Image 1 (cartoon, one colour):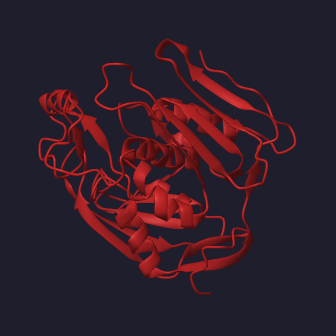
Image 2: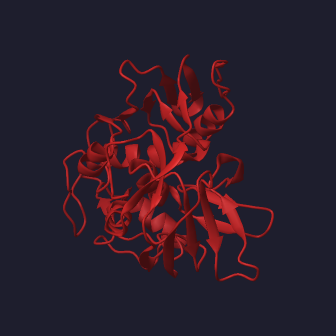
Length: 299
């Protein structure tokens, strides 16, 4: 069937393979990603084609490995794939349920710091509707996790209209280079493409210096992502939206929550939540049996 962005009832996969290449955000290693059509109920599976035996790791929160500022998947068979969150957001945002992601390096290409190039590649390849029903988790009771020490929290509550929504509040305090931002978006493919997909990774100048001192991102310049000076100006670049940072935080949230293994119908509200807390919520959602919701809190 032809690409249909309006029907969420049945599982979907790509019509043809799609290819995206580029250097990774942290390691700077050139990588090629091939997004392959997959059978029903496959889910999202990463396959390291550069390693012996071509080991695989399923894109699920059970395989998340702790790391700062990014999402890493790791399996016991030796498959490790880093910085998967933007690609996962593209797949979730376009409602791709089944895909084998072949990658020939340790890290997913950073492309332009957003997930729009992945979306463009998927749409060019086309989307096929399959015959199996999608597994959708309906949030029936509030699910809340928080990090009190860092004033971060994220909760999932029932949706009034059944359309999944993410509402994010970003506030780094009075010394931040930009004022508090908030944004909410309904997770239809159209809204995702128009309002979220092009939002890019952002960092502060001093964060770049600290990361490069540790050997990360030494290939990057201000043209490769959004870098803020202390006074709020952007280094060698321009914002795509005045509130691009909060939109990118929503992008990350979508990609991380996709690791729960199911689409969801609910309203996600987050304040300053990062990858670590997103993973806790993904784990919480992954353990819910429909009809027996539970409340979960993190210390």
